[in-house]
Image (cartoon, rainbow, N blue to C red; front, side, top):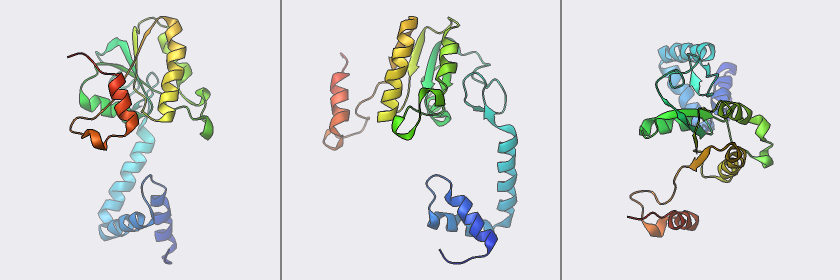
Length: 197
């Protein structure tokens, strides 16, 4: 990296810590902020406000300013609980408007190779929620990665003995895709999960 002033170097270093931001992007962002100094104050204020006000919901562990969050305190179907890995997964499901139940955010996925065990996730809190008897179905909406699949399998083994129905998000070939460009594992799952018309 070229030598800049200490404060500019520090800003670039901090920006590089953000996911998906490399050195070139960090420099571009830093110079943009320098070009429009009013943006620096607005950005700093919003970052401080997020630090002060945003936290995890004490029930579902979604990101919120109010505790419990608007989903947990609202008129949602408490009999169906959707388990997701991260708060952004919850937001993706909410954008679809397809799910009307409540959520539980695990804050990650099992990954023994990276040292992430059940104790590192919000699994104990999930099991405690399920003991209440209100939940009749758990929809597991973890990602379709090795870690997500391992988490789904682990949760299924924990929940089934409670007599609660366990379901998994459907997966297969995306709409608008050409079969020739879809990987073999996705095609296999689509064939295995086929439904009658």
